Image 1 (cartoon, rainbow, N blue to C red):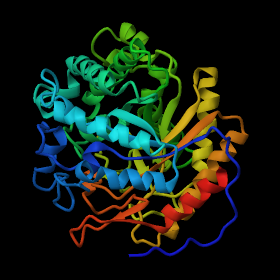
Image 2: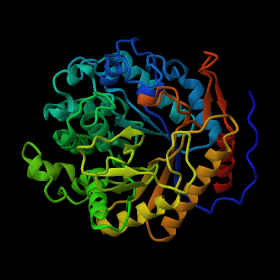
Image 3: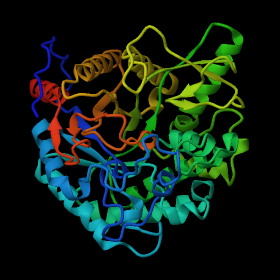
Length: 456
């Protein structure tokens, strides 16, 4: 296969010379080799085996076979010209039971991967947890249990001991908001629980795990630590008091519930009383200073008061009527193949609002995920998306927001959680239909490659 050259467009504005350009992936979505070399099962292995949970009936048992084909993928990183590669480490590949004996073969894989990435002249940026809770811990209560945070800290110690001599930048957790809301409140992601607001302990225990991980990594001399939180502007569906109140509530759930404890050392009003354990003491751990703050951004959300006439969805997930808000479509804008709204200016708004809200408590920001799902090798719509969002990012920097890096989601098409293989987020096309899993750079890959050359 060949890809068509992208349409000509004006060059991107100039970013700082030390700006970190990268791409992101996650272990469960790309590695495959689910039953090989001693890997233990994760919560997603069980969830995807349940009838009807994955929209195309697939699993990630093979995914894109990165476990065996990582040299090809690292070569693509080098060809693309990025400075950083954000990947995740599978907890159950390293500790098959979530705790206890170490799986040497699993650690060896990440050792080889990090070596290969470094040899390609790319900076490895591991995420230590990207939703794939070891099944053995899940069966003991998972993130509803405080103990899981302490088991996570032990796992972080194991990974840092093996990889820390070559890894200078770490991400503790990916999107604790989604694991809390989609996995435990609404039941649309693993582990499939429908606890609504009784899922709040999951948020706290993940944030505690983050704090414990920072403590472990600092004790080992690691000097560049962050988290990858998902955030987005929340817009009221109208100017009515009810809609504005619902939007404020949603902003707490998506943004402040996960940012305030880290950046301010406190929960939004009324939340701490709903959480278990010594919350005030935990917040001291959770709010340890970070070197940078990661944001995953995809789209804004338009929110109104509860309304059964509205098709309430959160990133494609139906919101039950018990929730005190409804989600409305953002109208009059382009949409991705996932039906997500394309609103680049919302990224500028998000970054400026965080700067205004948190002031000097906000460390330098890195966009740890931003991307879109579109089909085809000639993916001009993805080029438009990336071009628009990078210009929006630059406008935020012009407005005084300290942004140090940008990672595209994703390097290649992958297994997109509850969507299975139906959504393609990659700069690189994966041949699922032919069964070869061959990698073919898309037009967006070539566009970004040229854009990075121009930046250099």
